Length: 266
Image (cartoon, rainbow, N blue to C red):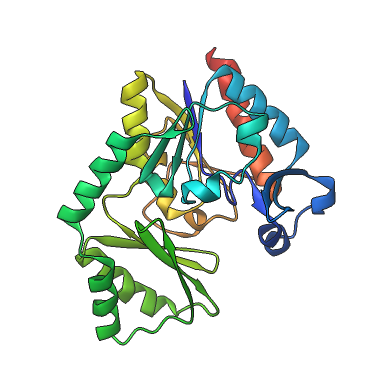
């Protein structure tokens, strides 16, 4: 059985997410990510213990938009919780037993070349529409890019940006202050389906907070979405369980639901 979940603002919460969502004092939580000798992301102790039990008794797959380098900052998946696979870079990369699965990466690069204009061409088309993004642009392994925005564009602008992106083989997702631009070929759902077929296993349950997570959630038998998530505010996605809690409490609720499903299906 496969249990798959997004990480940031679904199972784990950064200092900013904890501040934004008004949850627990980080000093009372379980630290799970270290950056520049500082703890920067957390789970509840209950979440951590439940995830450890889940990973020992099923195939738990982290599914994240983070780059592989950023994912490797989670020390729990090195020291405490053994995982066979991880999906990083929004599905562009699959990590198998700690190593990049090269055949999957090559498949993604080929599809990107065939299906999408280049990043430079997309930015030129957006500039032609007079869009100027108030924020810093970041690259993600030369696969996709995003802006860390100082101010959010109005909904009408986002609709036009979305249209331009789709017409050129890209898509967008606004997560907090981050506006992502991702080639159509890069999909968490495709990566999870590939692993599922490779292992001959079914995906029992999944969890995620963003539109980008719907790519894999729609293929899960059970779906969980945190009440604070982007998915909870958009139309076109349905048939999922919305958590009662927000913030880090939602992460705990999801992991406990996963564990309950595991015990029922064993």
